[in-house]
Length: 278
Image (cartoon, rainbow, N blue to C red; front, side):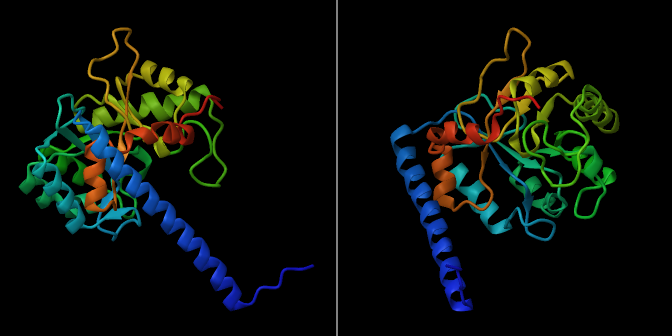
């Protein structure tokens, strides 16, 4: 029997799906907040956003909410660090992709004495809605940290970011995405580039190995968890957990600071860690 849905029936179905999505988010929020009080994890954290405001991407966070996040962190005794934090109550802020809203928020970060780490993909620099090289160097003069987000911003393993035909992930391709992007950025920035952020958070053991050979010592991921305190004595690059907090309600952000997202580590790893290398 064919399914014949009218406009009102379709709207009811969409409404039901929306309600389910809202309920899932609410349950996740409540669980995160509750677990955070049980765990009370005060160890160092890295959180990340994509942009400030929505002028350049839908993945933004309003100035007001970002200010509220910063105020909440300080209220509970957190201090802001650059690079990898290591001490309890140390928080590092990252921005992925290098959208221009960061430039618009420059005075905010200077006033708050926060210098975020911004991961940029070489091929995106200067495109519409992205920072230019002159703007990047100007922000760097103010203490902003820039590190690698590969050359093309394509995933290094797993599904591609878009549906357009992609180059084969050959050794030559990996060399451009990892080593050449690092060396190119280091030359343009005039300082060492030692950190890599996985596009879309996708990584594997093979990607970690290749990144280490390409000269990276710190690899920033997209799953929650405790940050490794000491560098690996074997020379293997450290994988740094991060929590995506863009758009989070203040209470949920506070829960992240207390480790409320840590129990979801396995779920996030399932989404981002690939055992297959191709």
